[in-house]
Amino acid sequence: MIKQVILVRKDLGMRRGKEIAQGSHASMNFLIEPLRRSLSESSTEGVREITRVPLDLTPAQCAWIAKGMAKICLRVNSAEELLARHAAAQEAGLVSHLILDSGKTEFGGVPTYTACAIGPDDATRIDAITGDLVLY
Image (spheres, rainbow, N blue to C red):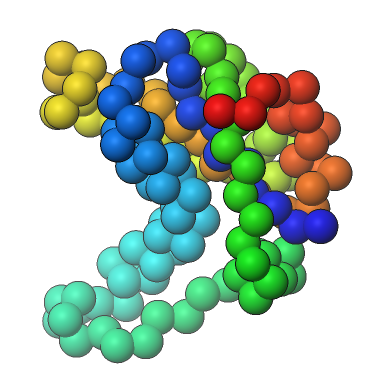
């Protein structure tokens, strides 16, 4: 099974909509970051001129997109825990995207780590990093 796990910090007391937005940012980053890089590298005329952007997706990412995009949302209780899971995922060779919120709408203007998405990839590889966490 291919899945993506989204980790959201419970300790921040974010509004529900903010939590959803931060998890969504994390989930989409495996697509958005390569798209942004491709747009900035290929555009000398401006973004409006680009209509096709190539993506280099892994077989797991392609399978995940094609077959339902399973997502599991889990809770972490601190920035330290979020950063540790992100680092462990990267050390295991998994794609992991950490979200640093600007703090403009919450957190008193202080940039704050809020969420992380690991994968999409094989569930057993992700479970080795997140299998002990509680559902959000």
